[in-house]
Image (cartoon, rainbow, N blue to C red; front, side, top):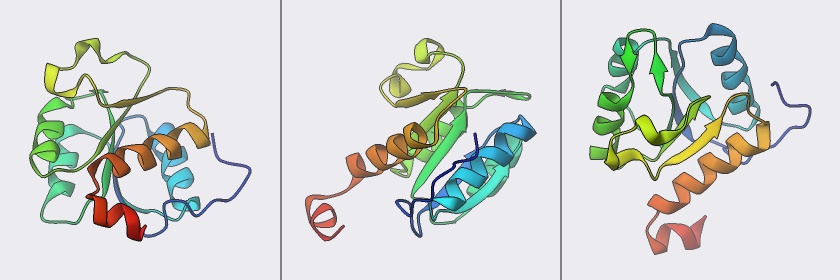
Length: 136
C-alpha cells in the first residue's frame, strides 16, 4: 500500500485517521504523509477517535467503518456537525451506514494510493465555498 511515487496533493491538510488495524493504519498514515498531509492519529478505536477530535482543525477525516469497539458513525456524526469532509475506508459497503452518511465517499480496502488521495481531494472540494475553490 505504500506509494511508489511522491505527490504533494494534500500539502498541509490536517487529516484525522481512524483505523483499528495497525498495519493498515501505518500504511495509510505513510500514504497521507507522503502526499503532504498532517495526520492526526491514527486512532485505533472509536474512543481514541473521539479523543483526537477535540478542538483541532481537521480538513478531512478518513474513517474505518467497523472498529473493534463499534461502528464509527457516532464520530462521523460529530465530524459532519462540524462540516468536516469524511472519507470512509472499508472493505464493506455503505449500506450499513445511517442515511446521513450513505452518500459519502468510500475507498475500499485494499486501496490504491491515488484512489485514497483522490477521494480525500474530492471530499474536501465538495465542502469548499466558491471563493475558497478559486484560491486553491
